[in-house]
Image 1 (cartoon, one colour):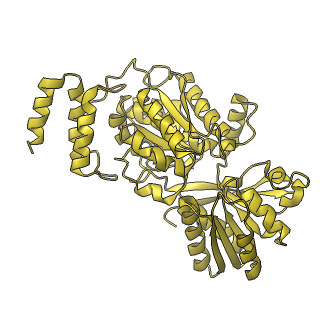
Image 2 (cartoon, helix red, strand yellow):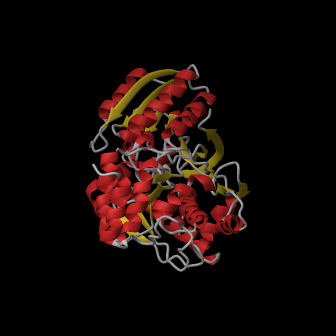
Image 3 (cartoon, helix red, strand yellow):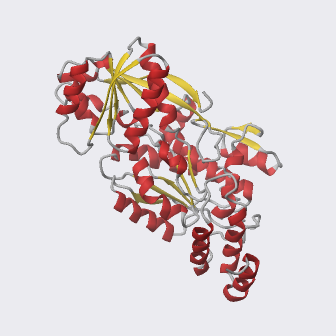
Length: 447
């Protein structure tokens, strides 16, 4: 195999513009991967060859500082259709809201951000990947999403393999911390390794010490289940049952019967939209609402109607845990931006994805993902000056300051895997059929 320096010189003479991209990636073999997941040299070299075809959007040779006047285009993959479509409106509205704030402050590197390019994940891996390919072919500078962890598992290789930064505001599966993303995947939503303990603590705080845990049989369900179980046992509670189910099942009798046989104090249900049917069957079997604890996949004001259209108040007493934000100012702002938005699930986290990426580009003085990606962890570190908006943080960067972006969802503080190290959780519930926020809990990965 020829020496890398000789290979770089050869490419410079043969490929002109493409050489800048290759030069940057060759350097990345020994530098850019230092703090994140590392690709093998063989895989990295293959990626280099693919990079010879053209210079990407905003390619500046890796030096930064010469992207003035170039547009920064965001793409987004979110559920416009499919089972999780209820999560779609807050995803797209918050992304557009963040862009409007950035443009109101003068844009990224002085250039207005164009309209976001949209793709539908549709709760289907193949369609989500088709949407991801479309965004890559559109030369976007960053991708927001996907909404569901499973959809990110289906598309991240397409996006990060093209050396485009991807940031999700709603992916919570623990397995995403260890994917081979080349250092290009970030998320502002906390891992279920943080969400699970918050749910367990809420259950024990209500003096319910015998618990059945029921979860959908996938990465999301299994990871969350384990986190709840570990924390319950650490707190001295009894885990009476752990049961997983096929989310595509048409009835859940076996799960309901298993819970009934154990007669626990509480039931933790880890599910998405199919959980409404599980709830209906559990309530009909004699489980009381105040025994039920649910996750963010069921955090909807319409849950009562979904569970029982004839008697929505059946959900009275149910408690839920979801990543949230104790930020009334943000809620007022996004309501003003989109007066029809009535569900804010993960909206602050998506807003933070867009803003953090924009600040990284400002810090790097480049719209090139392979350049600004190294600046993403730096813009939210505690050593910097705290700031809370794109405009305030950008102005501090322009003055030569290091910054600590305090997100709308809370302090992000990305770790070496691109995960937030602290998070705010919303404790929600139902009074009759009325959805209400009961309070907020803080959790740090150090706990």
